[in-house]
Amino acid sequence: MHKLKLTAIGNSTGVVLPREVLAHLKAEKGDVIFLTETPDGFRLTPYDSEFERQMKIGRAILKKRRAVLRELAK
Image (cartoon, rainbow, N blue to C red; front, side):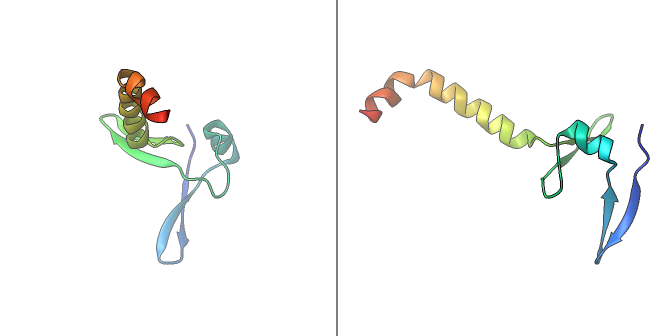
């Protein structure tokens, strides 16, 4: 468990993440990370779960309509 400190950033409040946490997230300064609410609390991740859901749907469509897309590409 890591202790996080809240700090003032202009008119907002920010959280300082320890270097070990950033390394574990494979994130660095300037990257975007996502905080999502779960039944157990909150989850911090470098991956956008909504984007991942949309990509999964897109891959399913590409797989199902592969022949049509191949013909359109000609």
